[in-house]
Image (tube, rainbow, N blue to C red; front, side, top):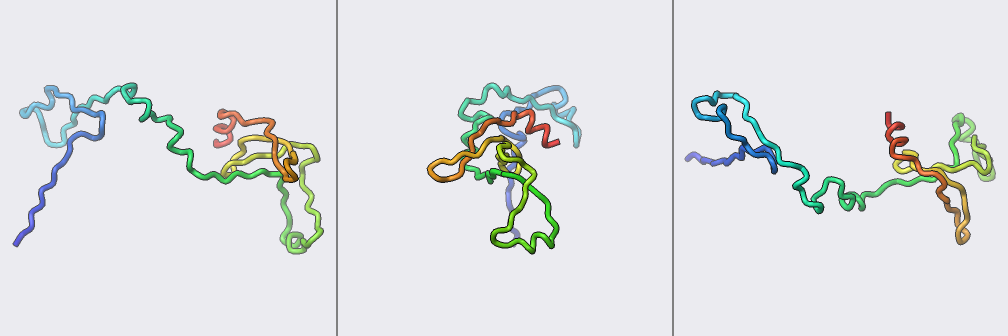
Amino acid sequence: MTNKMEVETDTTMSKGIEERPGPESSPENVKEGAEKSYEFSNLSDVSSSESVGDIDLILDIPLEVTVELGRTTMLINDLISLGQGSIVELPKYAGQTLDLLANQKLIAKGEVVVVKEKYAMRITEISSPAERVEKLK
């Protein structure tokens, strides 16, 4: 006993693409492997709720946000010898701005403040989108 399966195929590639009839698609002119021409719909026809720039789609994606006071390099021997009360010197001076990183990319700079007995950061400068794109290169 042989099982037969029927499969339907859709000739349109995606929503908004329509096959345009032309002389090349007439039965006598169609050859195996011949190209078909398609007409794409206008993107301005998409409603605003379906817009590509809809930020609501990404609002629940978590980011790692870090406030960085400074970085330094150490020898393994110096790192192993650290203990309670040890001092690690940083290359930044008191009063210099802190870096605010999102997923390890600099997005802003600011200064240390204390709010309700907790450290916080007041943002003083935000990197422009052009600066962030330039740093990716």
